[in-house]
Length: 327
Image 1: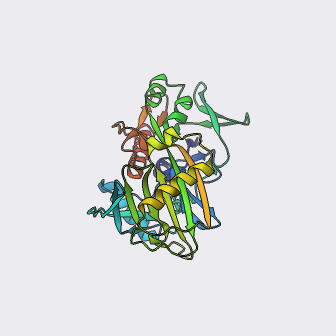
Image 2 (image 1 turned 45 degrees about the vertical axis):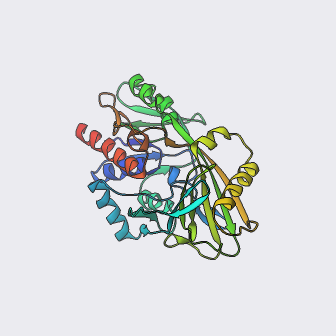
Image 3 (image 1 turned 60 degrees about the horizontal axis):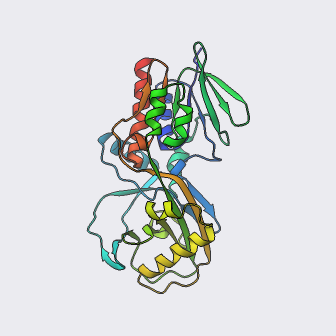
């Protein structure tokens, strides 16, 4: 009997592990509390088209991840994004000398996770609240009181604060996850009926409530019918205004955007705000994965490494590799 491996979370880390395990001939079962996959790589459909509210792009440095990205490109899941990049210091715009190769999902960031999910068994809108082990196997309990199992191994691929409770069967792993500080980010989307008269397509922002802004239509495969922008507030500003009403967040960040963009900004035809409570780890770690091989319990995610998309993928790969060593 091929007892499946449970994977909690369908962001890039969980899907990376799932793909590798399934390719090696092992059954997996995925769970996610959301209605769709992607985690912080999720995109939101809106009246202004699809919006990348979380991860804006990613880079590839590790050779294994570079190979994976090239495969994604061959499948048409990703495209290279070469925006006109700027920096904003004290309200002054300057061209960025940064020439990093940047990648985005096509036609939206969530396309990568959506494609990776194809053919994998998953239960959405299922929030796992407890992971417990019987004499030989694992079982999961969800928020509705339903039990799932048995499972031979469990991979927890959620943000560290959510992983902590699910790792209670392995106190050392739970303690490590609890030590990770995750910082929040307010994201705001703005749409304009006519294109703004600016050269800026992406901007790293300093000395402002904003940290980053991107012009959606500059990314490959995007709808260009309306001029949509995504603004990310700084972690510092987001922490200070964590419980600010969305209307006030939009007003303040749109004001900061209008001050720095260097052109007239008319009233937006569409606005949206989204709060990422666990947007990124405050510091990088070098765990790769948290593992208790004797129990068969693992935790992976960007917070185990760099805080980047690449880190999440590598962490998921390492979780799968550790399990395959045991089987």
